[in-house]
Amino acid sequence: MTDEAPPQEVKRPPVANDHLANERTFLAWMRTSIAMMGFGFVVVKFTISIKQLSLVLDGRLPPNKGYSAIIGILLVGLGSVMALLAYLRYHHIERQLLSNSYFPSKTLSLLLTVAMILVSILLVLYLMPNL
Image (spheres, rainbow, N blue to C red):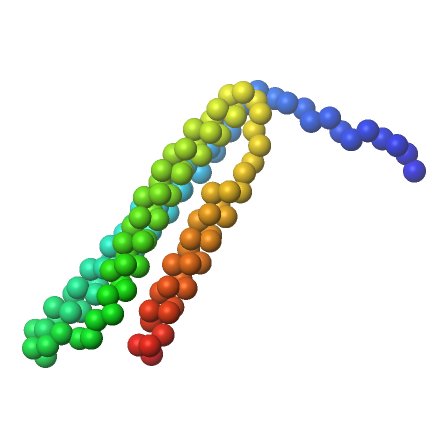
């Protein structure tokens, strides 16, 4: 058994690929936030369309729980917050790359995952009585 010292981390100056990868990651977060906002918009508008269609066909409104508007607004808000956090994360990583001290963080990924699980639970609870 040898007592070897752990290998020293070799610090290298950031190269263009590092900055471009950071930018691609930022753009992926932005696409995801746009998709989430779009999905929230669709959730709200779909419910309004169903109400209007029911009114035209039956002459009466379907029973309304009112949760779809709340869930849709939550999705749009979550998408907006995600866009802001993506911007902040992009600049934080850019500063780390420039100072040659990058430390990965899983906070934003964890936050998004928890938020999406909560919204998914809300959607499932909303859709369960309709089965």
